[in-house]
Image (tube, rainbow, N blue to C red; front, side):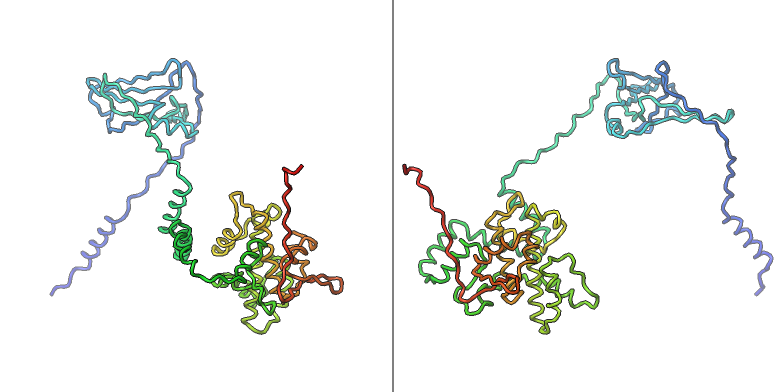
Length: 428
């Protein structure tokens, strides 16, 4: 085989390189232009700018083109630009007050036309007619065109409270989490129990149920006194108020923020917690039993959420707690249990119930001998106003070294609720 000529290969490679090289960039000579801004003159017609939506090009048109401008005699800002090709039954019309021009009217920009004269090196900037770029639409001569009326906005039909609630439930079912759907399902079951048919069946079932007088008395006292669930036959202070009914089983998992903060190697910041909790952190650290430490931490966390919820629904504390977020489960339970009204205020009797929950939990935290000065400050109350509430819960107040303590004696006894006697208006 004959070896190829290396010279021929070299020429071929060189030629290939010349073909692939990009063309040289054009050199632009610098221009020192004099800019002249021409102000509008009412006696002279300004230039008009428009574009053809149909692709018509008046420059390439073989016949001549007539351009006319019409202005309303009364409303001078209303202008029409009409381009009429010679020998055609179609003309192109653009307005400054309909169609695209209406949307452009919301834009406060000002349009100008620049004309550059190469010989004199002058750039003239002049305002354009109507301060609009006209959209030239084809129109048949002699036919009247009107803009279609705006599409009426369909008004939202007013819905009743039941319809709004049903719509919200459907949205939550479609877009909500499994946890929220489960909670809504429970609420639906509770609402079903309130139906007339369900009440009728319940009445028939209750005929054969033996009523325990002690439990009934406890329930009546809970309703009339607005206090947490309790056990009047308890033999120890720990059993007097039922902790499992104050903090429900599914809520303990949402109350471990203090416990986990204590497990961190870095010192946790408890400055945002109420003073009652801050004053008991050191004692909490000394508890050796881990399960007992977790229990007391959750109780303190529940107190924190109750105090924050109270502040969010009272005028004196709303500014300090409006950015606090409660777990959804607790917030939903508090809202239902304390009957939060549309004005986001707690009724007076429900406010007393919330305070009673807090005070009972302080007894659990302090082994049923609590110094209530700091919790009074957290509740934005005084120790004097807390004393009758403690007594209402069956507590006994003692004094030691000029400090008042609230204790819970056993058996649990309550003072009689004094009922106001109605005055007989008919009595002379």
